[in-house]
Length: 455
Image (cartoon, rainbow, N blue to C red; front, top):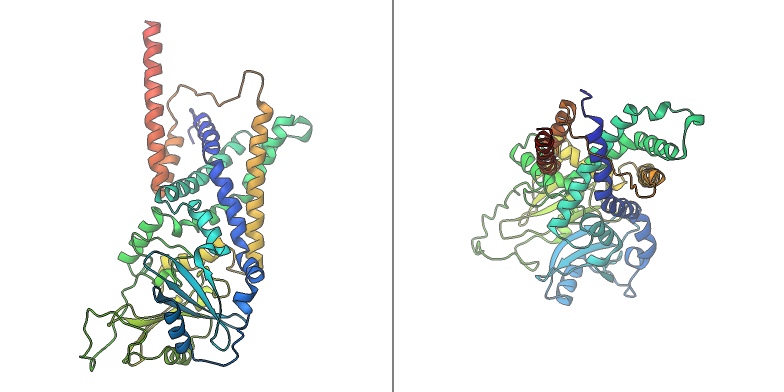
């Protein structure tokens, strides 16, 4: 890098960005830690829902159970059925037009055990907290994404300043109290730099701007992706169909011989021409789709039964290895398998989503993944605290030690670095453009004043 005014803008941007995004960083990190162990937490607090048995000991079919749920909740529609592996109870998701969603749990006899308001389950609560601070606001989600972008910049600029100031070369006896905390801040930043970048990048599928555009690109280039719809970026609580296949056009059922059906009619679970859920479950198992998996009813008369296994469902007991992901489509009338998409069929974007989301959530490789993410989060929190303490140690009476601005043009090195990051992260690029315009105005106005004063 050309060192002509490189350190000063990096230092100021690093300092002020840290102050600006720290509140959200703390929120995202703490909520992320809370979400890491949602499986373990829910297994303990929802023991009756997950593992309990109904007082009714007689066995009924899964179709009879669906009919019972439909009768009990007439204002709700059946969304999906999650067929769980023992010892978990099966889960039926229902919702109404007002946005109320509930989980209905069925025991081994397919009898109703309990129900939950989906919005207030621990996993969904923490996910909503992490993604939008409970607001479900698009604006807040933009801020979350912008925070993630600036976190990447903090890492890049922090590494540069660490070596530029030769913090690691400072001997113990030479360390002042303020440099001690600054050095700890720098070391922690270096240690967690790579895993933190990975965690941030694997959170991109949820982002409102970059996530949607990457998904759109993957959809427009199926050899690379088959990802989420353009305006609905991936979120682990939206659907249990794997992210990489959710936006595919579903094949339609062949309803030759069903001329008595009208194309504008809504498919009902009581459609006499439709195969039973039990039949579809058996067909899926015959295709070596073993539990846990989810089933989504046909959305219309030409729709199909969709059976899927996902690595990023966000549902306790339902996640599988990325290599086991599959989405199969069954004709609703004949029950015949029409099409099936496996992990090997995904493009690079689809595979990135499939691996990245469970890695971000902490369950890609079991408890070790959770512990690794937890260590990174704790180290990140410690780095934030050490950075704040090192600044506090520099404060003197009547001097807050704000980074002073050098009235020089930014170096080529700074501009190229910010340009690259801005292209890779458009929201970051937009924010940097605004900062650059403000900096230019200050620079030229100050320069002109100095010229006038000299004249």
